[in-house]
Amino acid sequence: MFSKQNCTDSIMILFFIKRIRFYILFSLLCSFHWGLAQQKLAAEIQMPAFSKTTVGEVFQLLKERQDVLFSFNGNILQMDSVIYPRAYRGNLYDYLDGILGKEYSFKELGKHIIVQYTPQRMSVDFEVQTPRKDKVVITGYIKNIRTNNPISNASIFDRSALLSTLTDKNGYFELDVKKKSNLIAVNVSKEMFRDTSVMVIFPIEAQIGDKKKREYGYFEGYEEDHGLYRSFFGRVFLSPAQQIQSMNLGGMFLYSPYQISMTPGLSSHGFIRSQIVNKFSLNIIGGATAGVSGVELGGVFNINQYNMQGFQVAGVFNTVGGNVGGVQLAGVGNRVFGTVKGVQIGGVLNKVDTVRGIQIAGVANTAKEATRTTQLAGVLNNSSGNVGIQIAGIANKAKKVRGFQLAGIVNIADSSDYPIGLLNLIKNGEKSLSLAIDENRYLGLQFRSGGRVLYSVLSVGAALVDDGPSKYAFEVGLGAVLLNTSKFALRTEITTRNHLTDKFKLLDNHQSSFRIIPAYKLTETLSIFVAPSFNYAERDEDTISGTGTRWKTWGRDRTRNTFYGGGIAGLMLKL
Image 1 (cartoon, rainbow, N blue to C red):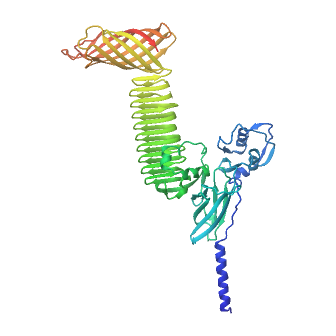
Image 2 (image 1 turned 90 degrees about the vertical axis):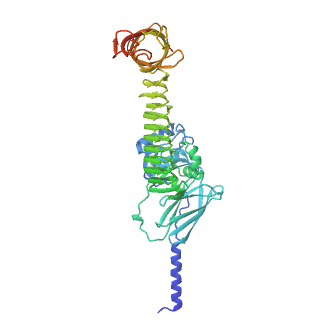
Image 3 (image 1 turned 45 degrees about the horizontal axis):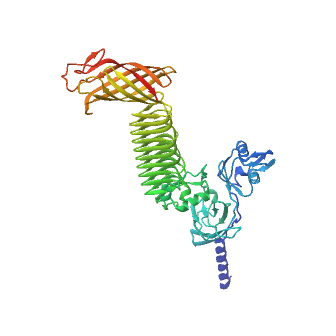
């Protein structure tokens, strides 16, 4: 039998053993490259010697042989930088380390090898506290190894548990971890510093093999600043800490099934929300995430740092820093800093860098490039590059139109063969003035403007003889160029004419005409034309109406509605 004292000693020993087990942790406090243990960077390669080559040529050869894509900041690493690599056989990581130098580090995310300029190194000093059985708090300090100075605004995160924080000005951090696993990797990232990871082991009952690994991905071209953080929406709705987090973590993001937020600062994903891509995102007022691959609903606004794939709707606005594939709906407007492939519908405004699909706005659509795109707007469509089709209540503007433009007032383009509007200012299109007299002896000044095929006609005229109350006329119409050679041109036009009194009061009688206009070119800019026409004219207001509609070979009957033949002759000056 054991004595009472022996029993007490055994209990105390078991107690201390149990306490020691709770504080066991294994940490790797040296810096390492995330991609080193990955398949691509660890792959064996064989490269020839080069007497002289460039970084871009080497990357291209590696892309073809190893099926990898390189991503980097072009301001830090130039593709045309000259290097002199020797013949090599070994793993890809060591080869890149040899040709670029120790100041660069490499991460592997999928097919992407991310090259980062990281001349600085950091150290991590931490401890683990367990205030409750189901909670662990990791605290510590991050310092510059060379200077021993604290590093502020470094990102501390656990990508499995979707936890993240930033160090303060003293390099201090606290990270609350829910102990769902007995092993976590606390990652430390800071721009210009080589990444560091700390492995922490917790003695809890769990089966690691049954735990699914969280998916992660990489945004190609993240280093390209599309201006989201410098935009109005970024300055107002995104915190500087989110921008720092984005720079520290580069293009890495994590997937999550869903998130719910009240505002950008109150989210179910906490601080790491800016690096999460959600399949379903619900923002009661508004939210800011890495992206969406599914559905996002916002009571007021949605902000995505990178891409949106799927369906996005907001009561006021959607803003996406990367690309959009799918449908965007907003009560006021949509702003995309990358490319849209799909449909944008905004109550007021849609603005995007590049669009392939349809833009519909109550007021205006604007894009830098809109090839194979249809823009529909109540007031204005604007593309500083190419566009497919533009339809606007007031004006359309583009560089090159591959389809047609339809505007209530004006179309502007460098090249547009089929513009339809009162005024068409097409750089390589039709612009001419003509002076002509018609069968009713109205002398008219006509301005034609448009593309190489369709053009508009604007005309003002005056009666040369007594024509009752009508003294003046103005005319609008649409024309088409059927043939255009060095000496001859053939056009056809449909116009409508309105008459005015000597006091410029509008009369009710109208006239519509269809003309075939052959023109002989006297010089490169001056042409003469004689054009037959078929017309329909309403009777004058102050005449007694005759019965029926009259058909005449030449000239109208002022007392009846009349179908009649006519003609117009004059001179045309190309502008």
